[in-house]
Length: 192
Length: 223
Image (cartoon, rainbow over all chains, first blue to last red; front, side, top):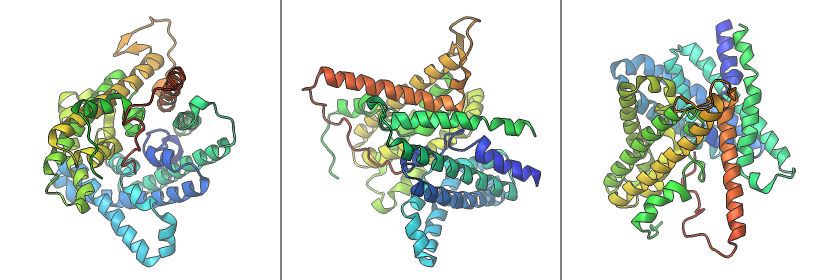
């Protein structure tokens, strides 16, 4: 149990996917202008990540031992088709949820955080349960980073930013400071 | 969308600087921030991406007649993934040390939005020669951006350039620059610098118009 907890915490804050591994930067820069959309995007991410982790575990256990060179190709195809299926199912079962997720669900397919999760999980040799906790932590960490970023940007809209820093420059510098702050969590792991 | 008429020169140089994938279009940020902590890593990543981009542009352009537009994106991704697998295995065989440091990020070239955007915006619509030129240009632009990031981070964060010590033993390395936050900060400062530079140029030459193609709408930036 302790091990699972630390996998979760480590993926969530210590080795945060966005701020430590630079994965999922596109949504981080693109949809972090408002807190509300950031939360939704984050939640959609958590969901797809857990699903992707399941897919990756399945492929790793049953199929890839016979053809290791197909790893990358099969991951991307399976994850993309799975997201497509999930999208159709949600549209059928709960149109309300579908509307709320909107464009974010298909966008997630090409999000590098999802493929990154599948690859990291494989490289570290996580089993099914470990993988699920890892995915949950990574997704929550992504949400946390997105929401923090959105909150800072919402506040920052009113402040007097110098001309040359407007746009992406200030966003990157804020992200740098956030990443710096998250490095403080590194102490959590070494104390165990 | 009917292709805008451009000369071969424009096709090549557009990607190198005026529409530099990283600095101007902000595409392919994951590798540009994640593996640029030394110049050697940046170069390896730059060349791997260059190879994948050129190979996929060639193949996409060659096969564009037979790929129905409904399934073009999955086809692009499959083509890209094939080249990435080749690049991944070649790096592992040729430079195992660097391959180990780059880790999963070589495989993650697949989801580099820069490559997909070039296929969608260019290679799937133009002749083979032009697509290759465009891929060369964009690839060179990407390598330039990677080296810009990598050199700043290695010099400040480690006091070395390509492994050679620059400042002697008394230099206290600014470690933060080779750690993750340094990636964000370095790119942020480069952008500050270029914004400042562009503002300066605009003020100096207020009447001069920007040439065609600059600050064109970023296509295929979905991911």
